[in-house]
Image 1 (cartoon, rainbow, N blue to C red):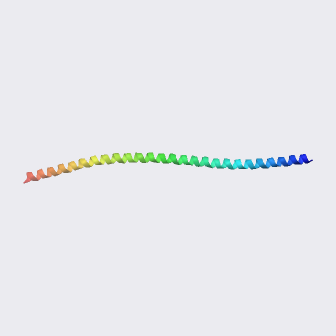
Image 2 (spheres, rainbow, N blue to C red):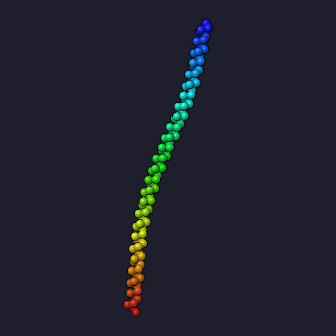
Image 3 (cartoon, rainbow, N blue to C red):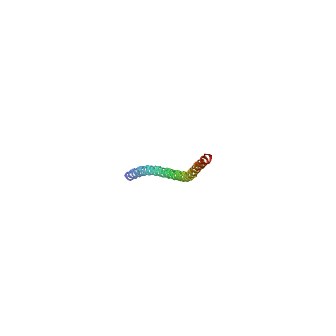
Length: 96
């Protein structure tokens, strides 16, 4: 009888240990799952940040191009203003 009782206690002890181990492993799996999800979210955020940087870079390049064109137009307008002043001076001289 003692052997049967010993075996029963041993079985219960093993079941308790296994139950604790399963609980511990379940906690570890949940922690790992949380970390994977965090990592996935981090990757998603990094990807979005990279896409936003590309869009910003395109906008900056477009702005630089527009500023270059505006500079050329300004130079042409200054040339035309100077030319108009010269024509005005010539016209005044001819009308005297």
